[in-house]
Image 1 (cartoon, rainbow, N blue to C red):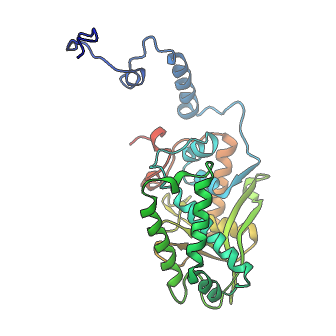
Image 2: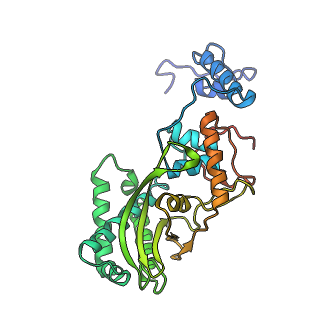
Image 3: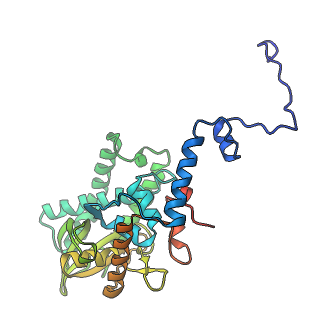
Length: 323
C-alpha cells in the first residue's frame, strides 16, 4: 500500500536517536536550532536569580485584595499561591474532580435560600422542606443551568455524570436524614446563606481580604459560621511553628473579619459537624509570614514538612521542589 503511494519506508539507523517532535527533542535536551532556546535560557537565568540567589525583585507586587482561599494557599505553600493566583494556571487534575464542590455549594445555597423564601428558617423546618422532594428539584434546576451555560464547568456534560449524580444526591440526602446534631440541628435557625465577608487584617496592612461563608446560623450559644466541605476532613494550613498541616485557617480568618461566632466545618461525605480551633498567636504568625512573602515577592516551593500539601496539588507538574 505504501509503495502504491510512492513511499518506501526504511528502518531507522540504530546509531541515530530520532525524535518525532520539538516537544520530545526538548525533553531529551536537544535544543539545537530551537526557536525557544533563547527564551528558555533567559527564563532559567531569572529563576536562578529569584530562587537561588534570593535577589529582591525590581518591581514588588502587592495586591489590593486577596481571597481567603488565596491567602490559605500562600500560608501553606508560596509556590502554589504563585501558580494559582499570580499566573492563574489551570491544574492538571482529572477534569471534573474539582468541580463537584462548586456544584454542591450552589445546590445547597439555592435549596436553603428557597426554604428561607418559603418562611422555613428553623433547622427542623429547613430539613423537612428539603427532604420533601425539594432537594431533587433544586438539584435538577442547578444541573439544567450548568448544562445550558457553556461558560460553566463541563461536569454535567461528562459521560459519567449520571453515575456521579446518583452519588452526589445520595450524599446530600444522607446529610439531611441524619437526626440530631446534623446539617440542620434542632434548635438552630438559618440566618444567612452565602454571606459575603470583606475587611482588613492588621498583619496584612491595607490589603483587603474577601471571602464567602456558606451559612450563618443562630443557635442557643449565638451565631455559628458554617462551611460545607466535599472532602472527608476539614482543610488545614501550614502551622508556622510545627511545620505540619494542622492550623485551622479559613474559618478563623472569617472569625477575625466578623468579630466572633462559633465555627463549624461540615464534611458532606461524613455527614458530621467538626468544630474549628482558633489559635490566635499561630494565626498571627502565619499572616505575618504571608505579608513578608508578599513584600519580598518571592514564592519558592515551601510546603509542610511531610509534603502532604503536595498531594493532589494542581501546581505539581511545574513545581521545582526536589522530590
